Amino acid sequence: MNKLSQNYSRKYISEGALLLMTIIWGGTFVIVKESLPDISSMLFVAFRFGIASLVLLVVLIKMKKVFSADSIKAGIFLGVILFLGFATQTVGLKYTSATKSGFITGSLVVMVPIFQTIIFKKAPTKGALLGTILVFIGILFLSSGEGSIWNLLGELGRNFNFGDFLTLVCAVFFALHVVYIGIISPKYDFLELVFLQITTASVLSFIASFVFSSLTVEPLHVELTGNLILGLLYTSLLATLLNLGLQTRFQKEVSPTNAGIIYSFEPIFAAIFAFFVLSEKITNFGFIGCALIFSGLLVSELYDNLTKQNGSERIPG
Picture 1 (cartoon, rainbow, N blue to C red):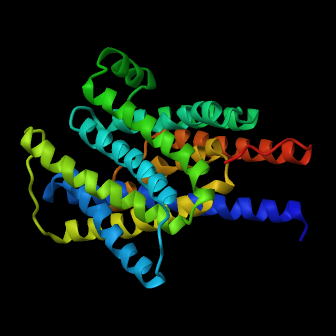
Picture 2 (picture 1 turned 45 degrees about the vertical axis):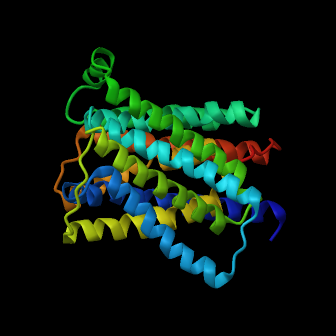
């Protein structure tokens, strides 16, 4: 196998891993929705990261891992960004609708190439940018539900509230996390980075849950039910431990912009899970949105492959 074939093989394996992550993330919508009536939202996030952290700690102890000062700093830095994304999204959902939250969070696909250009000092390919535009339009269709797209945009324009602002901030943090994973993960052991990220996020989430309670933002409560146990196991072991491991290990082989496009498949898989588990209908606009998101990925991939064959440089990622 020549070097070009090896590069393509590694790239497609990495993109497949990111797509698997997105499928798992799509399932969290249904799982978490069924779990949150039984626990405070920030406390759920804290337990989610905490359980994942304890499981990985056992593995690291058996492997006799020794953390360097630099890897600790890098892992904590990523963990803080991850926590801020979840915290602002969680609080924002208390003040805005799920539809608006999903659309605004999806705007990270536009932010990633902007941050990539600023941080990497190199713009994404034209194909990646075109794919990003198609994906963003697709998210707009998917988020409009049964109503008009113009109604969704009008509602955002007329009633942009505090929850919408926090959700926009959340999208910024998630976009930064995607970009910085591409920068930091090649430099350190991926298991160390995963552990430090989720431990940092867990500690900060526990602190935030008590702060929110003292400020009467959200009272602390936990009721151990089957739905809650299932939700914690799914989100901690699959959506957190496995997914962050895959992201930290494989995203470095994919440009941040293309990674953002792949992650934009999350609402598609969320809609599929909701259809089969909660019997929620996928609207005609939703189907159009799914097609546009899929088209965005194809355009980005095909253009990048053609430009590489013509000798274009690879975007770091």
